[in-house]
Length: 131
Image (cartoon, rainbow, N blue to C red; front, side, top):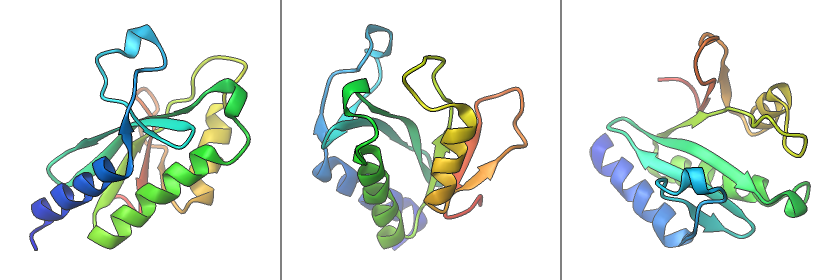
């Protein structure tokens, strides 16, 4: 199986494991959100890897492991299909979400490599590692 077909198979598994849902905020209506449990996310395909653009849990549902379960699903998909997952790790500037450092630590607990080289752009994380 070629790397390109691995990406397609991994993305297909993601689609089968999740349900389409509305964007949490009107300004994100153009993004293709999918729901897994109590968490929504946007996953896209690039030629060499999957891109996790967003992962969000409603404020009243946070702290209960919902986002962990979604990330574990994605990790399992990537492991099965031997593809890399790139995450855009930007913390929202509100009092209900994680700080940027907490977000990096959260990804680190899930064996992501934090790419701190992009100081003026969206921070990135890689699973299992940066290609």
